Image (cartoon, rainbow, N blue to C red):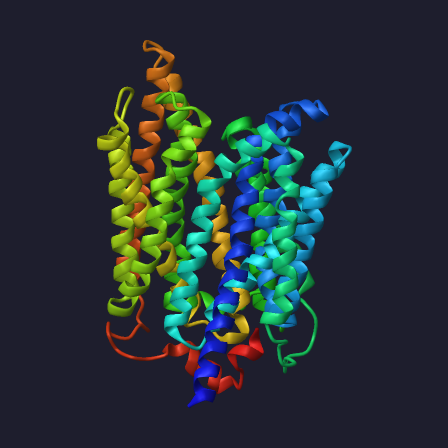
Length: 495
């Protein structure tokens, strides 16, 4: 009896530490992707950067992150979760140090590239670790915790970045994250057991790696430069066309090779396919609230950067509550029902935000939209995260989440560029009104576009469905566990 209690305490202690490790990893990736935006003016003054140079501070992070997620997921499948997660954190730490101490712009950009590469290894690996947990309740809890961490990283990025940049200087935006990331890197080997040797032989599919990275990086580059260069400019259409060529070559190669980077049969798994195709709508709602919302609060409503960040704090609180609610809902209802309803809730929040204008008071007009958006986006995120890996074989969970996170990331980049362009075009067309009124109208239209996309995402979930899902309330560990047992793998061994 005493031994049983001791085992339970040990399990709870390990589960708590594992949660801390995975949430810290995902918090850092989201936080560092956003916090540097506040420090860009200071960076520009230090290195005498032009507009193009400032843009590259962001692009140097986004290109390797977006381009290497698929590779990071496959590496975790082939070489083990523990070494790949530690390697990713190590690269991330090296990038933070190099960027924070950089005496020249090229070293700053190199550091940002290392951060992006490290994040691309760590993110799909952490999700694969979660999806490999044997207990469905444990999986849902971990996915909910990670969703909270991402939400807090996004909500806190602007506020903390402003405080740190103003008080300590832009270098500490990078350097203060080093101890946190280092602690996670040191804890990972103790919390994750080494993977059993894989029965598969051969190395990585290097042609597939090269083609996928080229296609994704060119796509991200084209999207991020749309607002600066224009949708129909050579600077946008050229990389976009090259991206299409690279992807065509990638899929052609994957069908023919014996050791593909991505087994195309995964795309026929209903739950995985639905999650990958419908999740971008949830990302649109999230980016519509965070990116466009921060600009709307400051430029249209006249909030200071600090007040604008604080205005988002209710969203962070709801994320904490909504993550727990998502776990309970997923135990009672099909994930497709939970995800679809969450999309409609997010759309309602965005529609309310579109009705707010100059002079709108925060409590009756803005606060309800923040609450609805926080609830809808976090519940949707947890549902999609669970669905993406529940029917994928254990040997492919890493690359599966690589695909999922790539789709999510590209959707986020497209949302920022697309919604920003919509707002700018609408504001530019209103020449007869004041500048503030034109900005307000532009952001209102962007919110409506994001709401429509969110509704379409909910409808897509309902249409595609999940033919392999058991009825609500049916106690089962799901197809993943059955497949893992059939293939002779174990959860801890796969970590």
